[in-house]
Image (cartoon, rainbow over the protein chains, first blue to last red):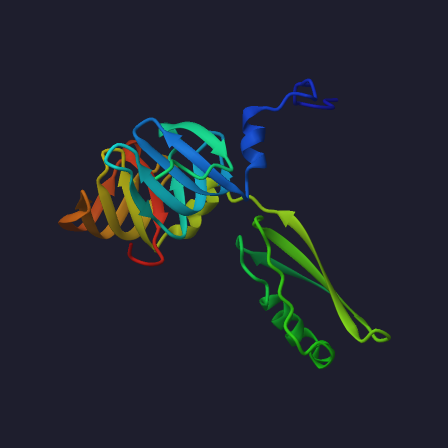
Length: 93
Length: 144
């Protein structure tokens, strides 16, 4: 009889996806591979770290910090994500 | 009695009170003022219970909240048929009504407008976008 399928981990470890999970419901700042950053409220994500965000502001970094504000919800493709910053406000402009 | 209410982040739950209104006239009689609860920052499902205390003449409403995640697949199911903005890795923007899509983010859009550098370049009746090029899919409540 299988009691547990999951491997036992040291309880003091915080796994990366656990950190992202903790972030659900709060603001998150996402840095992409290109010169682009996204700030929004995290609604959810999946194993590929595709992210569902709300109240999103999009920042283009190189040309004097162009800003595009989008409303409602977006699904961001995890393919191009480089870094996630919980609670981040985005680049200073 | 208990009710289940779903809320968005920052939404003020005055609707909670109107739900109780419809359930019991007595609540309205003794609680004439709307109850508002500001939920920050969490998006979740709230289960509400209302108890009227005759002695104090108060109606106490307690909300317990459970966090509800919305995964990408749920998101994709609910946006079909809605006007969307799709941005590609190249920076080109497509706006139109989402006809259908799959798990690879391949997308079919109707009444498509193509924006390059913010300028409208083309209009297509139907467009198919291959998923590997998609940076994001966004619903649009208002035109940006």
